[in-house]
Length: 332
Image (cartoon, rainbow, N blue to C red; front, side, top):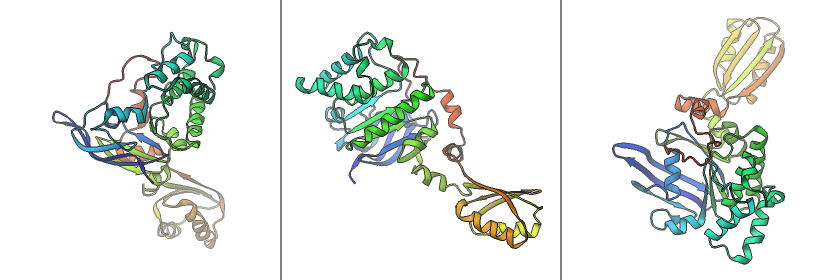
């Protein structure tokens, strides 16, 4: 597959401080790629370099086939950035907001009206096209701004916290929109988010950034599987488990840790669904009956804490709220 985003040893220094530290990254065409990290981790600086808004201290990057250091004009035609702050003009209608952007990007007159109609229908705002944006809800404005970002048919769409500050229903509407955008093919989406359930639900792969480096990269399932003992088996039996039996279970392949309390057994392991039948077999052979059993996996939040030592929730609480529209975000 061809790369929509490709970075080699990408670095940004501010004096002696290294905000982005020799990052290598490849995002394939058509991927929905997630970028996670604590506040100040360098992810915003990384995105600003990839979008031509921040100079590069060292290394190289190509986005949509364009060298970001050499041809910023071509880069801006090939990408779109939807920032966290709501920036649509409140004194214009939804239609007028898209029309003015179409003119900015020199979309031919004959193509403007059908393109605007197509996009407003895709984000379910066609019926409100003649209403002032000041009458829109936060979720409606976010959908409008995503549509606005697609007006010139970019190859790569950068979304910065697209659902922050929205109610759960509006969040899921945006999720459905992102899924629909990918169906047509040809669009790569880079999603920066503080919501780990959002990354899990939407992203093909996720990069976790900490202290300017990518500390983990893979599918959500791969990231969770990389943490030793990531599955937890909770087993309730009909009699206390002896030391000998507990030792036998502990020695099974993939078992990382075992805790027991009376008739409750907790096993931390790799590949818990494969291991559970073997544990039940050992217990049954010892005359112990299993009354209940369950297998659970760690969450992306657990992976995040394991890798960074910090909670994403704590960092999200300190981030800017999308409702503070019009205020520039302080870049990390």
